[in-house]
Length: 68
Image 1 (cartoon, rainbow, N blue to C red):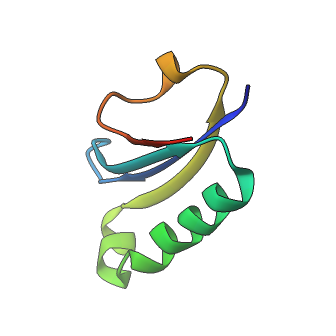
Image 2: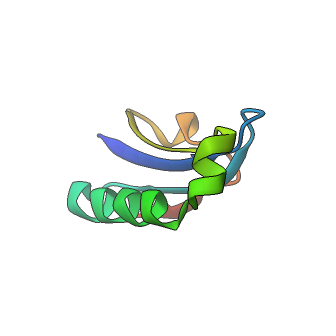
């Protein structure tokens, strides 16, 4: 099973927001939203929106909103 993990990560590497789901289309829409919600100041400071995949719910950060 492929699980899509969207994360907004602050400059120190801490996960600020995280949403995980099994639907690729929904995950890509979420990622686009995460990217759009980062301000220019945040981007300049090192904030990033990251989309990655994992194979198990055990690999999803515990603080994630999990949608399936």
